[in-house]
Image 1 (cartoon, one colour):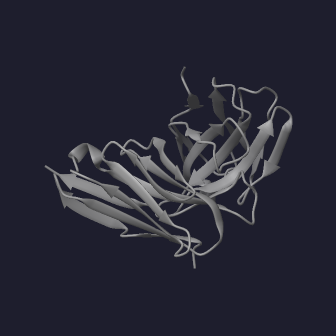
Image 2: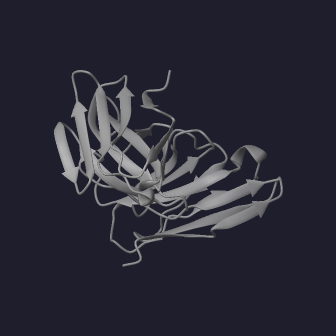
Image 3: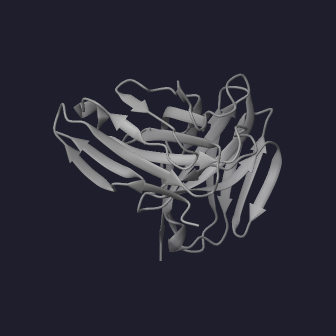
Length: 111
Length: 115
């Protein structure tokens, strides 16, 4: 079983819809990162969370440490949000340099 | 700032050939990383470096070598290319060691095919 599981694997939405992508992990963590991989391949960091909730524009990330679960929400989705969204965790028992990545969720937002 | 740059963008190798993937960053970051991304799989750490002259293995180091002679550059060497090394390679950097608080900045990737 992977340490980091994302769901769904693929998600198709209509423009304007509210999107939720989930990430569950099986180890104790120091922090959790959400990243976005554009269709061209480039990867950018969206959020780093160790507790609670963070918001940036239309993106909201939440984490529940007790339940070992995080969600990434996109409000008023737009075709430019189409990308792969990747969850990565920092294992609290491991080296701080090392991120363990989920396989990603492919989001397609249709106009 | 250019951020993290990688060359080449694409490369096709024959089995047994060697090549070096170049990575450079202009953000004065101490920490640099090489990842590979296989289809349908999460990114895996190949090697990392905590500063010039210091490197260490990640999860999947076999078949690769690295060096870090300067803060800016972190090349990845494939000595005897094998089909299993067909992948997309990403270089990344961060200011400090603590991934807890340090954002990693990724390069655009190198798509390598070994035939």
